[in-house]
Image 1 (spheres, rainbow, N blue to C red):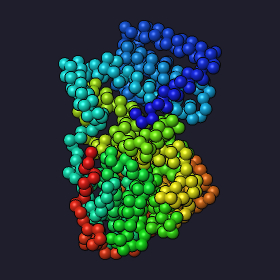
Image 2: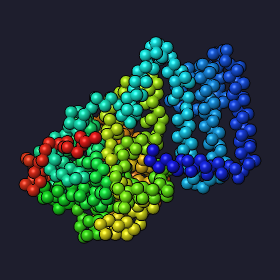
Image 3: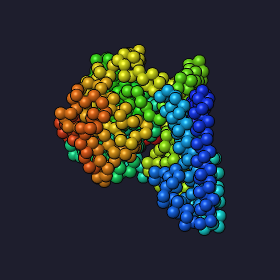
Image 4: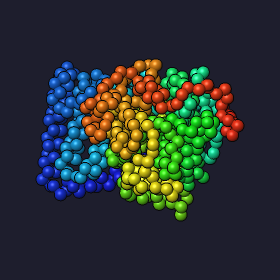
Length: 560
């Protein structure tokens, strides 16, 4: 796992902190022993009486969890032995939290300790092992052991492929039932392709929409199936759409830098869209790290006296990395320096594996994105379900090591982008305040990768009109929320509340108003007002200077 060494160091720091408080350590030990003895005595008293065990579970006398889906099956409460295992695990989890409370670690160390403690506790849950999971045992009995045999077969297949299967990967294929929106590749270089889509309205806005997706995954998160494609939605709304398709970087491209992705990726796409449409400015949109890249690219052009974006949309994007959430537990000085040494010009620049990146992000929600699949597929032998978002999630891209090390240092570790002139790109000092654009800043309430309160901080770094919107759900589901389904909700603040008086995310949230449905329609209305007049939609894709090379979705998106 990326940055796993901090986990070992934080356990050492926790042990040393408690060793300096021997009385506290002994008191905690006595309390744990006493609680386990009481729990054992209770189990002995109910072991022969399932009705008593069920009654005990109803009273919640020991370590009763708050609705934990891992233990939702009735047998976890009704059967004395499994009830005991469940309660003992939850008791240990609570005790470890108390030990961290008592250690007196500094804020950063305490957050890391809680994160890695949760990782260990999640892994050690009795639900994750066949002999201690009543659902697994019951299913094995019902199937005569066939469920276990199927699970072992799936385990063997996942070991051979080097990754945990999350979805039925035979159910999807790019170009067959994903990334179906009609268009063409009109530009290709060694790190990306630029796609131009065929308009779906007779008239389009004069300023084209240029989308910069995250380079950690494939672009088609924004063009999944027709019913949940943001690209198709934008085309239906009358936008002339271009998108960057990042390459899954091979080892020989490990030397590529952030400035390469900014200039030959983001800015190349903007310049091509301007040339094709004849518009002096575009509507730019960046998602996650694609938004961070887009902001740096626009700051670079601003330093050169250019303002190519009339409006800029940032979806779940960090510009100020003051609080990066739990992923920060993996990133400390030793890890950053080791990456810089590994990918230094003196070494052999390589790539960071897409599988390593995916597993690291999955570990932030291990019960939902790791252990659930371990139990269902390896222990119960269930076939993977077909889910397009999980298919995309498993279809990652390798990153150039040089870019990755720079990104860790400049953004996550030193948080330099928020300081005018601190980040240098192509020998140019960047200042986000120099960008002249209208801004649409979207965050998601339950985002575990880009905390919404951190995404909000971008509002204070930028100049020009800024519309901050908070969507329901998480990093992906909060963004991919089709307007046609009218699901979830989002929040906006009244115009009068978006001035200088609102200085914090908490103040904004207190004044925000809830709206039912998807933020997509709200964005479309905002973007239309900044996209120029309606003009006749083009009959052909690309231009004489950038003719179609091949149909969308192109070549790079298919590379694994």
